[in-house]
Each structure stands twice: as C-alpha cells, then as structure tokens.
Length: 374
Ligand SMILES: [Mg+2]
Image (cartoon, rainbow, N blue to C red; front, side, top):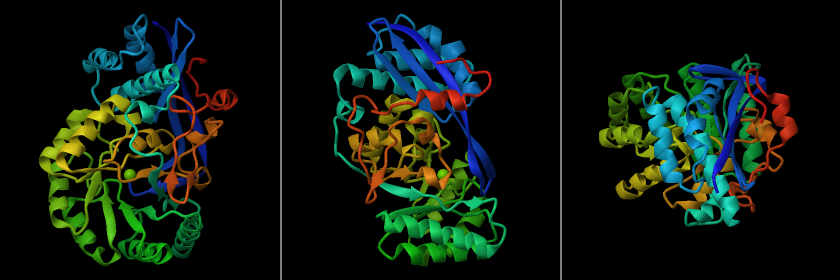
C-alpha cells in the first residue's frame, strides 16, 4: 500500500460570545484537517489547532515527501517530515503540520487493523479521568457580579454532571476579584474535587510566586503557565517556590522543548498536546520521559483525540475536557459523533483509528478562504 495523495482544509469556527483570558481574547477557532489517501482506497484523517499557515506547510512541504510512501512506516515518515520542515521551522507551525499528518497515519493504521489507536498503543484502560475546563472571562460579563455569576452557573452545572476536577482562568482581572472567583469555585466544587488555575503566561516570576502563596488554602492541584512561555528559568524559580505543582506544555513542541523543561525542573506536570507537539508519535516520546522521571501528563485541549493517548498510557492523570455548549473549543461542530464525558470520565469511541467521523457538510460550511477542497 502506498500513499497516493494528501489533502488539507482549514476551517474557521466563530465563538458565539468571544472569550477573554489573561493574555488574549478569542472570537474564533481555526483548525487544519489533513486527509491521507492510499492507492488501495484506505483513508485516514487527522487534525490540529492550526491556521492557514499550517495547511500551507502541509501542502507545500510535507505532501511531496509523503506521496508514494508506505503509510504504516509511521516512525520513518515522522523523521522524513521533520527533516523536510527543519530548515524552515522547527516548532509551532511545523510541529502542528506534522501532527495533523501523523494523527492521520495512526488513524489509517487503526482502520487497516480494525482497532482503536489506544489499543494499538497497548491500551492501559477503557476510560480516562477528565477535568472540566472553563472559567473564562466572557466579553459580555462587564461587572464583577456578572463574572462571579457566570462562574457559579457554569461550575454548578458540571458538578451536577459528575465532574470531580475543574480548571479556571486567572490573571485577567484584579487579584481581589480573582481571589473571590477562586473562593467561589472551591465552594461550588467542594473540598474533595481538584481545582486548577491557568494564568496563560501573564505574570513575571516574583508576581506568580507572591500570588500563588496566597492560594495555599484553596488546595490548587496545579498552577498552569504562570510566566512567559520561553522563560523556563523563571518558571523553574516559580515551581521551586510555590505550594502547588506547576504545569506547562501547551505551548511547547517536540521532545526537545520538553527536555528543556525537564532538565530545568520548570514544571512537574507536562501538558504536551499530540495535535500541537508533533503528533501521537512524538507525544509517545514525552510519555516515555514522564514514565522515566516520575512526571505527570495532562494533555491539553481536544479530548476527542486525547482520550486515545490517555487510555493508552498510565502517566496521564487527566485529559482536558471542553463542552461544546461552553463555547470555548468548538471542533465538535465538525463531528458526527463528538465524544462526551460521563461522570467525569471519557471513553474512547468504538470505531477503529481515532473513531471520529467528520461531518463533511459542516467542514464545507466553515471552510476558510484559501483552503483547497478536501
Ligand atoms: Mg492553558
């Protein structure tokens, strides 16, 4: 079997209400979807949190090195793709482009074998603990009372749905208001549940340390991205001086970024995201490091895919979970069979590969200008 074609489409899906967090406001989400075709009719598809630039990288740099290759030689193709990209870019754009293809190849292998990806990877469990991710600052909440009311309603809803772990944004309003929000969240979710906070790189190290020390009584399970993405020295200082673990990784790509994090002791919870850091193949390298050094994994973002790696590897403490109705992560608008949590756990779909089915009408509806048809 040989790869006969690679096609790509970019989609842009607006949020109903733009959401603010400490360092940005988002009003839409872009995704790159890549489909790998073979001369025997077998097809696999993958996706990433990508932009038109990622799609162009696939079309212009990766497509030509893949056509004619054996689609099951995934490690070889990963290395070939990395070499094709490395002189141009080795992180954000390229690792996303490689990720979308790599996931398509694992999907294709799963379909060929009639097995879900997590079983191909040596399945560890059939359901994965998930945390509810939310607690944003919607732009239509203009007063303190509205923000507190939004958080209360949101977290109460998902406590009732059985979640036992929650993450909220911090650093986007005054410290006194954030403290009220954290106190409220802890009250709503109860003493036993896990509560995580995400600062999205907003603080300098001294500010992060000072604030985190005020939060000890709320039993924060992890402090996420407290300082600038590239300030691993500062992040290590934070990690050594705060009363909770530090988590980073959603903006770090390939094994080499994570080696730097581990070497510097910048975090003990690693949020490497297969759709961003170079695919499932590269994520497995990170899982090996976590297993070796006793570090925890908590993959960022798309639970529809991350449930596969979470079900495969014991190093995963939680996968992040977004509900479509929360209007933050909206890739599920493109799926015929979105994956839903039950009582705080996510089960992989039954189908082979990643088991997800694209709604082609929805993809066409949200296709972004400049994309080729798929
Ligand atoms: Mg985050």
